[in-house]
Length: 93
Image 1 (cartoon, rainbow, N blue to C red):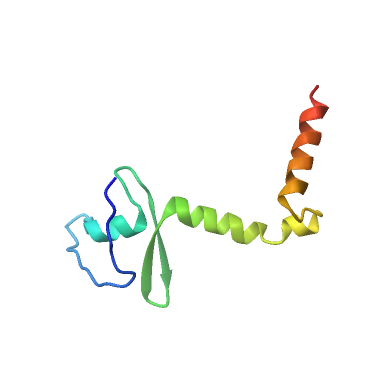
Image 2: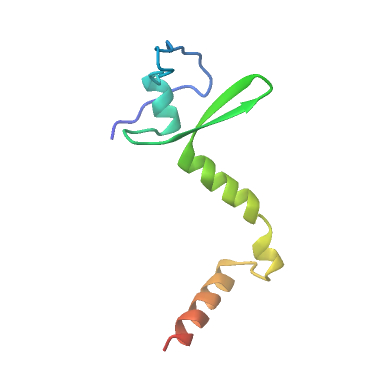
């Protein structure tokens, strides 16, 4: 895979075709990490649209939803996680 240096902020445009289809410019696909078959999510806010990689967006939503849950459950370190995994594995023996 070739490294591409694309700035964080740039402007590009595309033409809307008869069926509402738009070709996402290559630089935009690169920044979003989109490949053939990737899915995108459109977020409409105050008359503007953001397009994001659906997989990345889903992970961000899960992380936001789960923020602080580890601390609530008393999990404060990687060692705590490893202890829980060992405990669960030993239950199956």
